[in-house]
Length: 208
Image (cartoon, rainbow, N blue to C red; front, side, top):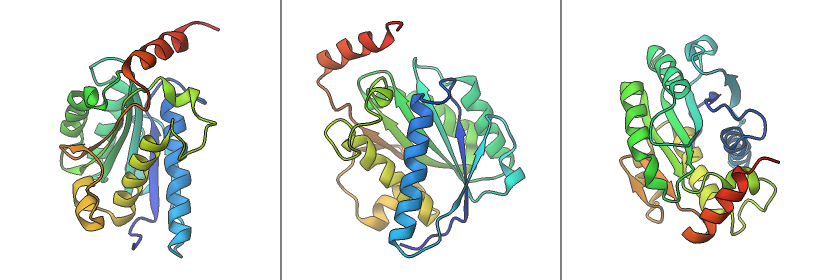
């Protein structure tokens, strides 16, 4: 697979900071991006970490990945600011989202809003259901039961970024027919049954 991206900007548009779901997903994406480049005999792209709203074109990246955890149905303003900066710099933009809802499709309205903010720069992204599990499973095996679907979706996004195309085009080029996609978004299902996830989600919200 040819690498067309030499510098990829990463934006943690969540408020979780270190150890937050968005940051953990971005770090996983960055690790996979470097690993697959090396496996293909290419120099790994440079990763540039930006703050939400920071002009993406300042570092002249070839692509931008905006990560966030969706706790409701509305696109957080921090995410919108990151999208506006990307659109202003005409940087191809992707999303890496996890929703606190069980179903990954719960995030589609917010991702549609993000696509509208990005405009012509939008290239699609990932929505992972069961977002409360992301911090809880950070140390579990990447391709283990609790992370596999999310990790495979991230890997599919890595392929799109490396080729410099949208999620749907990347799926066509790699003949990927195994993942559920809607409107250019890869949907990674929650690894737990719905009742179990509800219980885990409530426990995760308790103050420690």
